[in-house]
Image (cartoon, helix red, strand yellow):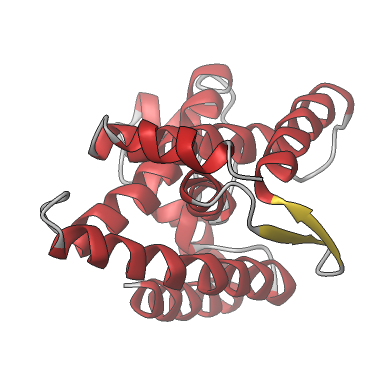
Length: 205
C-alpha cells in the first residue's frame, strides 16, 4: 500500500503543479468544506503538495516508516490479532490525514482565503504509530542525528505546539501535531491490548 499511495500522490501532485485549477479544487479549504459540503477535501488535500521538495520529503519519510508498519501489520494479521493489514494501514494513513484537518476546519471555517495542502499529517501518523510499536528505535533528526523514537516524539509534539503559537509561516504545525497524536493512539484503536506491547517495549532500554 505504501508504494501505491506514493505513486498516486506523486501523480496528482505533479498534475497540480502544472494546473492551478486542480490545485485549488483539491486543497483543504475549510470554508468550502463546511459551507459547500466539499468533504472530499479532507482527504484530497493530502495528494497535493507545494513543490517537488515538499512532495519528495514527505514520500521518502512515508517510504521509510510505511514499509516497516506494513510488515508489522501483516505479522499481526497472520497471528490473528488484526483482521486485514492493508485496510489497517489505509485507515491509519487516511485517518491521520482527517485528524490533521479537524483543527483547521473548526478554526478557519469562515475564512474563504485559508487553504492547506500536503500529506504531512498522514505521514506524521505513520511515524508515530511506528514509535508506538518500537519506541526506542532511532529516528534520524534532520537525517543526521539519531534520537530514540519516544524522545523524538515528545520533542516533536512540543516543537509543533510552540511553533503553532509563534510562527505565522506556511507550515501547518497543528496538522503535524494532530496527525502525530492520532498515529500514536491508532494502534490501541485497532486492538486495546497493544498498549501492553508499548509498555513492555518502553521499559526495555
